[in-house]
Amino acid sequence: MMKVDEEKCIGCGKCLDDCLVNDILMVEGKAKIKNKICINCGHCIAICPINAVSTTEYNMDEVKEYNEEKFSIPADNLLNFIKFH
Ligand code: SF4
Ligand code: SF4
Image (cartoon, rainbow, N blue to C red):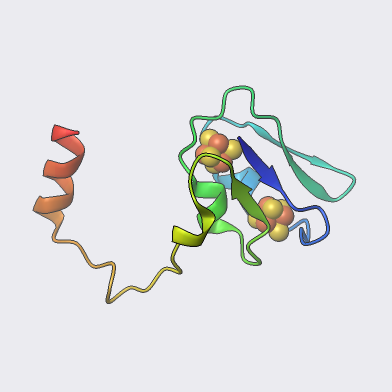
């Protein structure tokens, strides 16, 4: 289950714009995840600028900040990972 910390949410709308399945609403200036058709992709966690989104699906302590140098993956490796998983 994905959840938004309403105290932190600044209502920027980035998570709504990026949710592939449109499972996020804006209610009184705060994002609200319906968790109806969520596919647990985690993109709302990644896109939130103030880390207001979390999940019960995995340990949030293991979520790392994006770092372009450390996260660099050769395109062929990524494609094969997607194909074979
Ligand atoms: S985890 Fe993915 S599908 Fe679920 S609410 Fe977030 S962006 Fe949408
Ligand atoms: S991206 Fe974060 S701050 Fe912006 S609306 Fe979503 S939960 Fe709120």
